[in-house]
Image (cartoon, rainbow, N blue to C red; front, side, top):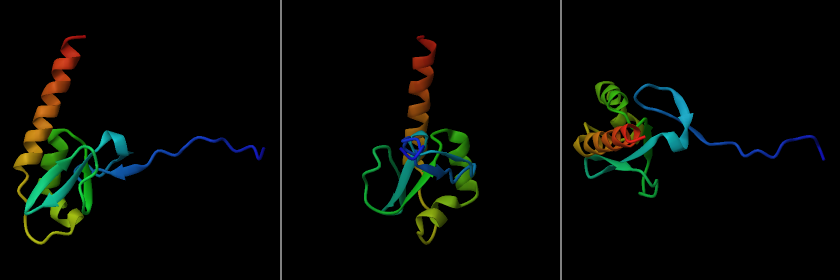
Length: 101
């Protein structure tokens, strides 16, 4: 043995909203599809992806900073209604799960 541990490194990504690094599994991948910023929770949609924490604060910061078009390399603004709806639904589900414990 060489003395090295065999732990796998967890891939990290940077949130385009708050600019903090986090484990990839804690972030939500988004892609640009026909002028819309679409959530990709499974990470299987084709194209360039941008990562954001699945909370409204980070989504709002990313929109305010115009980070989605820059990260996804798309000219012009993107419609983020679908992304906001997904994040609000996910946050609502997590609150219900926490209150039932």
